[in-house]
Image 1 (cartoon, rainbow, N blue to C red):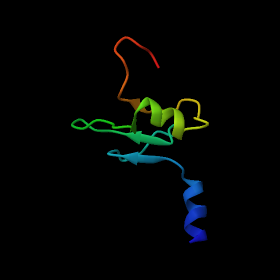
Image 2 (image 1 turned 60 degrees about the vertical axis):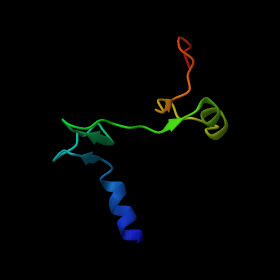
Image 3 (image 1 turned 90 degrees about the vertical axis):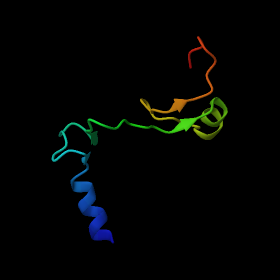
Image 4 (image 1 turned 180 degrees about the vertical axis):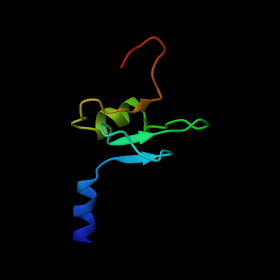
Length: 70
């Protein structure tokens, strides 16, 4: 188990739908027929469940009032 964990740290790039991922990306998705679906949260779930969000964290807040930014 420890050997596999160590090997994973050596190659941290993941490509889905691609033969080789870009060296500057930790995750690369490629598709011509499907989209990317990030986590979907309400405003309350976002505020109560993510206490220290990472810079650049992506979620979709699906209960926004029209015209009101997050």
